[in-house]
Image (cartoon, rainbow, N blue to C red):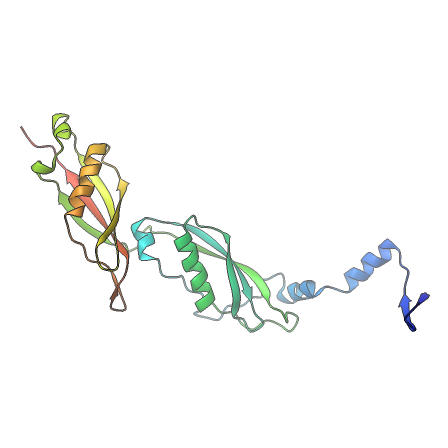
Amino acid sequence: MRWLGLNGILVGMLLMTGVQAAAAETQTPTPVQACLAALKGGGDLKAVPGTHVLPTYPPLSQALNEQGTTIVLVTIGPDGVPTDASVSKSSGSQRLDAAAIDSVKQSWRWQPLPPACPVGARTLVSITWNLLGSDSSVVGPTIEAEEADYPPQATAHHEEGSVVLTVILNAGGLIDSIVVDTSSGFPDLDIKAQEIARRHSFQAARIDGQTVPSGVVVIIKFVAPAH
């Protein structure tokens, strides 16, 4: 043991080899290591029953057929309440990612952490957005184009087909934009389908009695006029 004088105070400094120092570190776990050990690597993070529910699918994301998986990095306080959440891996849609983060921060809860985790812990949460089999998609009417709507060139070439559109509505029910989800295979029919959709009126969705931005899936069917 070597003793050094520092401002009249004796400070002990033990000279150790590299091996001894490594052994000492192993014997004295860091706060993070102690917390992980207490949680058994995260396996003992226990959810509060009924709080880990899937978020509501944003209506506009349904209309735009947005899907994917959002992986959220959640910081959990000692009391089990999330103190922060951020996107670790995006679903590809900022709208879906934001909905996932909001849901986790507002609703998800864990049991209080063990005393070895006084500053909290972190975990990854995976939320998958999948419209397959969903009964919440808004499907509107199928509209058959009239003969007067047929572009002359389409009539001459006997073009036929169906165009699947998503009509995006604002909170007032007015059309903001139209997206071609499935083409007829003919650009002139696709353009005419959007013109036909704009002539129609659609009902915006309501949440808690208030109209909200939403989307309606509309099918425009083209059958070549018989001559």
